[in-house]
Structures are given as structure tokens and as C-alpha cells.
Length: 429
Image (cartoon, rainbow, N blue to C red; front, side):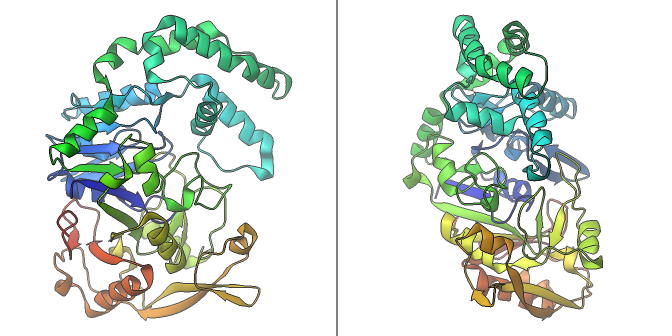
């Protein structure tokens, strides 16, 4: 089973990097297929902690070929800063491959992202301001700049001119900002050309040939299911396809080559930014989850909103992605809580919803229906088998498995790389 997708089953920050790293020693390629540097993975290797934003987390494992697919939007400054930082810490980054069809984030994308969010005021989406949405908008509007365009000065200038033609009117006449010149954008982008050139390839072809050889290819999603542009809590979503379907479109690999879909889900729930969050906590329990789980954004440092586990969204994620296995992370954060609530359904104006409501308004007004499970006090960070977990922790996992739509194959019990309990092999099944 060589094609494996790893994706978030909640609103992001579930620990996808750790799951990817768990598989990486048996993996030949790790592919980032969507998003940009608006999300991050934190991976702990021994005493070292790595915060990755644009690069696939498999880059930390020797021998793995990391790939940035065509579905990603790339901030070149961030890319090379991240590569330089890893190289300085002794990480080999020479194998990185970048799709020639990936789109570029230019300075005007970042500018528009920030000023438009301020302009929206109370109606703002809560973006990171890194230009991700505007870059994807240009892609869909067919005025985007792709990696391959950087190697043809004439095409690059034409594309930047075409993109700035409307944007400068918007910046000067609506947002009262200065116009951006074509020369400054071209100069900014072309400074990276020679460093970028050796990394660029037809990655779709390379991945197809790797799968033909029987290589194991892991497709790593940015963000998560509930932030997917089509299937998330729109409009409070990201601008790309963060679900399993996005792995195919964002890499150029056919859907039939994706054999296993691994959903990552926390033992509780978090989200960053605006939008509905039925199980959100505003009391001391929310603060406890935030402090104990260190729930602050890898990329932004923003405190995350926290809440109890929501089986409604997990079942939804299992369905829209075809999840074959869940990896449950941060179970250790719940240690010491006497009674642990779990959302099993929603109440919307007196009507019970066991599945995700179709209406955005219903999701906004959903009240969680909880069941409580007995907690545990024992330190579980040293557990390496399911039987070593306290009985109540085992029961909690089994209850989540029964209500979540697929089996829980691995359980994170601490931040360290090896702090994981494996119930089923994620590659062999």
C-alpha cells in the first residue's frame, strides 16, 4: 500500500507532523500538497524541536525525498529562510523537490491579505496575513505566477504586470495605499532563481514513477478537514483543499493510487481564528487544556481556542475523506481530569443532529450534547502498548473509536518522538 494520505480531522494543529514523522523511517517520499506557510508542524526529535511551516515534515528523516506539490503556494523568502535554518542545525535539505506548477506568493499578496482583513473589521475571517488567500485567488482567476515562470524573465514580467493592473487600483483607490511597481516585484522574485532552479522538477511524473516502483509515498495535508475550502466551516476556512481529494489534485497523482487515508485527531478539540466551534470552552477547563497542551500556534504564536472532543466532526471527517485509520494525539493532556465530556451529537433548536448539519446557521447555533467518561490520574507518557494504559484511558479511546467512524490505530501519549502507542500498523494495516 504505497500511497498514504495524512490529514487533519478537526480544525488543524492535531499533530500531523508527528504522524508523518512516525511513518518517515519507512517512507521514500513525503509530499506537501496544499496550503502555504500559514500552518505549521512541530516535530520533536530527541532533545530537538523543529517548527516547520512550508516544508514537509519528512525532510527531517534522512533518505526521504521531500516534495512541495503543485497545490502549494510558496513564499520564497520563507522557503529559503526555513531551509537555511534547518541546514544550520545539520539537517540535509538537498533532496527537496518543488513542482514547477506550484504558485508563488508575492509581496502584493501579503499586502492585500492584511489590508483587506482590517477593512472587513468584524466580518474578518481571521487569516494569518501571509498572502495565502490572495495567491490562491490569483490562481483561480488565472493571473497567478508559477514557479516555472521565474525562469522566463519575459513571461514573469507579463504575469506580474497583469496581476498588478487591477490590484494597484484596489490598493490606491479603496485601501488608500501606495501602488506597487512591477520592477520591485520582479526584482524580489528573481533574486531566488538560481538557488531555486536545482530543486524544481516535474514532481507529478516523479511521484508516479516512484509509485510504479512500489515506493511508499506519504501525502501530508496542511490545515485540516474543517478548514477545507469546500468541506469546512465556510467561510471560516483556508483557501485550499485540505481533504483527501486535495492530495490527488495538489500532487498530480491519480486518486486510485491513494491506498490509505490516515486522519489525525486530538483527544480534545482546538481551532485558531474565527468561525463556529460548538464544544469551545470559555472557563477554567479551556484554560487548562490550552496550558497543558501548549495550545499556541506554531506559525503565529496565537493562543488556540480549546474545547472537548467532538465526535460529530470526526465522523464527518471520516466520511468525506474515507479515513481508514485515526491517530489520536495528546491523550496525555487529559490526565488528571476526573470526568471527561465528549460531544456525541448537537442540539439545534431542540432537534438532535448526530451528523454535521448542512446549514452554516445550524452549525453556528449548535449546542453540544455530552456524555461523560471517567478520567485517570496515572502518568501515561511512558506507555508503549495499549495494555499499559490505565483502564479508564483504554475505555476512553475505545469509546471514541466506536463513535468516530474508523479505527484508532495509534495514540500519542506525550510530545517526544517515541511517545506513541501503536495498535495497528499504519502501512501494512
